[in-house]
Image (cartoon, rainbow, N blue to C red; front, side):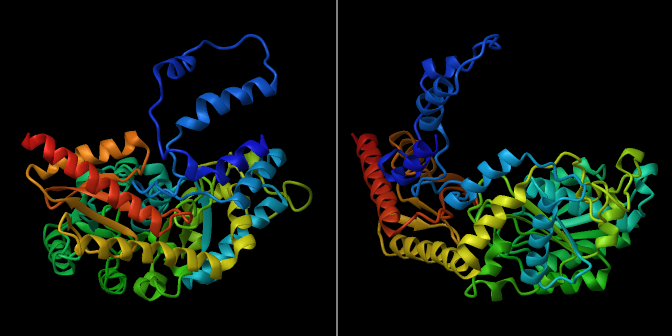
Length: 458
């Protein structure tokens, strides 16, 4: 099994990025509950024939459609070790929690947070952003909100119109409601419009509402734009708002000296959500939340359940129980694959890898703007490039191009809408991607576009 999966990674370029699942393969996963045992070798053979060839393909250097990391071998080995150890990191006095706490310490150092801040591994930034909203809610309404609920609240939150949908989802799940979230317009750089934000806060205060939360973006989902975090931090301080940053992928640009200055102001955040499984290439899943006020973070979630009673001696001793800082009592050892990744590769190499993906985006941008066939649709901020093939009925043309790219297995970009125009979106996150992969993408887009336009003209 280990040989096969290492061969898969080593030979990844020889495979298509993605291939559709044949009907006969799909039907095999409709079989009923097995009553009899099967040997491991036969189950593994099924994995090799029916699962491995038909995954999304984000380990492939040609996968550029969504914000998915490519994984790394050290993290893969750590997953095997964590599976064998089978540790539950909800609490108790055990070394795996010390590993997670070391990563909390590293993140404090990376983002300039105080020693009293707290951090927690979660599934991903959707959960991390929810935790950020819940802590902000507790700050505004008091921790008694856990008992009394949010009935009659007048709390209002603010974020960019380019923010990820999980921010609205967090408002929904927190009981505050999506209608209590103001989606602030963006400027021509796709950053939150600061003047529009100020006007929205003023209007809500005049209406008797209570602004309580400002969510900035460190790498928006469509274009990778970074809000003016320093300015947003100042506004949050003046208006007494909790300043949360959705840094799902962009926050870890702090590892790269070429990018970190563009994140100025992130050190002033009250909480930051981000994913190690994106830009840092940790195998899925490994999300994280960092909270400046550790005491408030704990009060937002801690349970007084007697069966979780802390002892002074024995296995139930130890002051830090992660289950006091989030909704999960059962927690896997996500920290180990992150710890392995950082320890094996080191922060300098990881930062260089992040810089490399941004240089590839600049290379793609240059190829686009110097070609008569292509049109750049948004400024390139980090490592996401939105462009399209020129031609009549361009939306349909580019949708066809992307679908054909997927089905041929050459590359896997996605589509998005930029100012009402359908764009080909190339999100360059895989550490295996090189300039030749960018060239193959553009050559394929050009060929498919020419073929489509010729067929339409015939």
